[in-house]
Length: 556
Picture 1 (cartoon, rainbow, N blue to C red):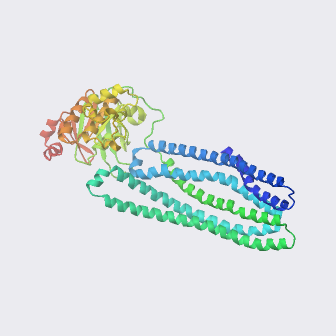
Picture 2 (cartoon, rainbow, N blue to C red):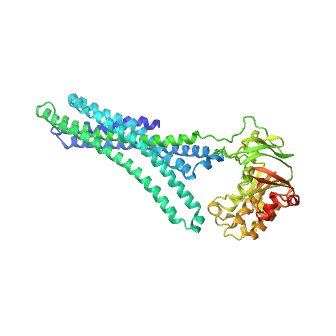
Picture 3 (cartoon, one colour):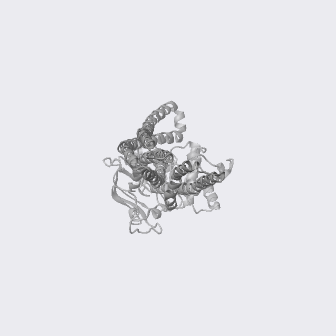
């Protein structure tokens, strides 16, 4: 940026120099005795433009480097910040809108950075031209300054309006991104329900509103430019008459008059550039407001200032009067004064109808969300008193909604432990009963499995998830509906892998399938956020309560 600023006045002077050269050429042309004089003058012109090339390159390339580096750092910082936010923000915000803020808004900041060059260069260039005009004929120049107030009005009006429309454009662009993201990730559902035309219509509607705001912005920008030119033209028309009168009266030479008009005409370029700067800075300001809003979001799930370490899990996990409501709906309690204990090595299952609060309960242990009241302790330490790294490294999770990256199988399994060797990954896959199907894929472990693992079946995705859990080898295991979406054949394969995974683990099981839970040490039946029953499979059947009713209704 320093290089760009230092070269700005030099570049402005080089761009202004042709005005002086024109005057000298016109006034000395009659006195040139030989072609040597013309050759010297041509050499000066060439030297000026060679110098202009060098200085211009340094000036603009330096600024472009700043733009590229700032854009990179801003994207990185935004991404880092968003990735550190608690889960509540992602339920409140559309993913496409977040993508727009990280992608498009940072590019508008680039446009703002580019204007520092203009601010450093164009006023100096304007000052050169204006100073020369004063030098040639100060009265004529003074009269020309009557164009400043109307130009200032055009600049102010267009900038204010453009900032307003740019804010709307970024909002509509975020909606477009969100619709595209949902459409591309939900292709199977969209095709199954024949929603293509519905989504086309939705996208076109959003695109229409986006384009309308773009056109309004374009109309303002394109109207501002010729408006400035009309104002300058009025001044030039006046100056032609008045300046011509001075020439006829012998008060100005031919060279002075021509260079004056060239200088005044060239003022239009820096004036227009500064007008565009005003508009682009307003656009960047609108984007900066949206980016600043993201940086003001603060995660509600943070590390304690004085964390307590959990070196080894030894005793029990305990819920004490835990109540929970999602941050965006605090009036509706999902869990209500839930208390229970899971001793080390025990296998505990939670059953209940949909919406009873089972998955919410499981999400509280690794602090995806924090309890609204009460506490969750591991070996007597409140989970909020541990670092997130320490806590989450102690927990393995296998859920119904397996998230896989558009990467190779080996790298997807490695997510369980990023420091694992290839041999450890192969062993984890073997224990998850995944090697058989992996070996049949075109590139085996190096097969890229598509967005969210769409090239694999549900059972295959689950076994990749189980392999991750084997690789993590955490003492606490959470199984959240791990087999609920599988067919019978896939369920048998996955259940075999899960049985091996649960050995020597303290396991919390949430399931709809009887086969997953009947061997649990304790089963808790939950309804509307409260624990209604507790006991073994056979004890709960004999009680003929909620568990037995779910069983008879084939919900287990």
